Amino acid sequence: MTGLPVSYADNAARIEGWITPIASACAGRTVFLVDGDRTLSPDDTSRSFLRSAGGDPSIIKERFQRDGYCFEAFRYHAEVHLALGAEAFDTLAPSIARNVPLYEGAIDFLRDATEQADVFVLSAGVPRIWRALLDRHGLRSVRVLGGIEPTAPFVFGRSEKGLVARLFRAHAAALIGVGDSDVDRELLLTADHAVIVVDHRRNQDLLPHLRGHRSLWQIVPQGLPHEGIPQLDFLSILSLPRMQ
Image (cartoon, rainbow, N blue to C red; front, side, top):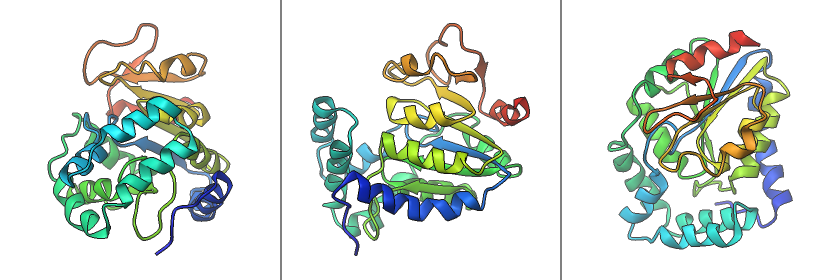
């Protein structure tokens, strides 16, 4: 079993080694990079995972509030989950996946997107939950990228999502990013088209950083839309690559 990288540089090298051949295989194609929690679903699945395992999600929230979305905070986030042991991942991830609610149109969007593009769900939480959820809907061709996995873990937060986006952007014909929070900031800034999903906090930590994006869109599954940003539903995201 491989341990978590200690430094940002070692972590980035591990991600680059994994993602570069995947991104290269997408050369000349449209790529969708889609956040999972709070974007495709109103739930935070990693919180559900911790609670189900008897853990306390508040200690992670407190660390992020103290240190921000830095490498050390995301490493702590990963450590707390990984300390639960491989058996917790084996038993809890599938059971949690069975109960995750999804926004209307999210699954149809992913399914239709795979017919015209390469589609990836990015998870700063527990990617195995999203793997089980997508498999349940017959979406095995949608790959899940994330680092909280006992067999080969790495830190996967805001900067790492940005790194993944840049690696794909170097090869893709068009890159569409979909997310909801500041953890997705670098991903969305790198994308040709950025789609924010209005969340329970109304994207307060994210939106100020994206106002200058040349192709910014919103999906509003709950609450009110943001002023001045054109609105889509999930299926309408598929039209964005034609707007290059």
